[in-house]
Length: 209
Image (cartoon, rainbow, N blue to C red):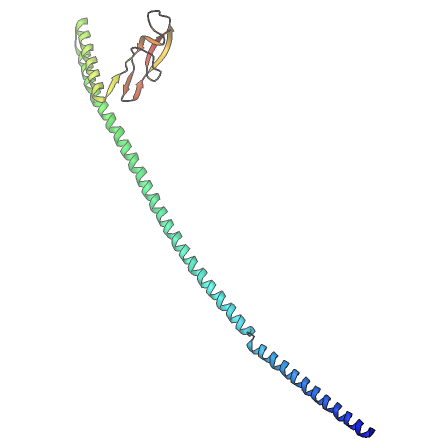
């Protein structure tokens, strides 16, 4: 009876060992298959390197395109700068030439008007045995011709009557005069002249009070 029980226990133990072994083998096989699947699904290092190279190549190509674009823009700006400098230089030369021409024309206009005055002065000097009255008349005629020349050139005498104006008058003396108001021109020592708004010579005056 005991022998039979022992045999049954051994058989059962053997069966349990067999089942346990089969389970371990199945588990191991499953683990192997899982690792294999992960290895198959995982990206290969070679593929990763190819992807990196492709990305770097693409970035390099884009950088070259951008560099070419910037160089083209830079060359365009350089060309514009050269043209602007050339245009400015031509403008400066043309303006300087025009300015010289205007100055020369103005000088010619003044000289032409003065030539008539010179002619009259030479005639007056050439006259022999002229009287004081003749000399006075000659000087008066020359003065009137001078004033006419000034009128043609737009030169006019500065008005010095009334209140002192520092923009037109130059005060060199101050006098007390109860008959005149404060800061009034008392006397003109030298006439002044202007052309338009440009003062050619200030009127030199005495100022009262």
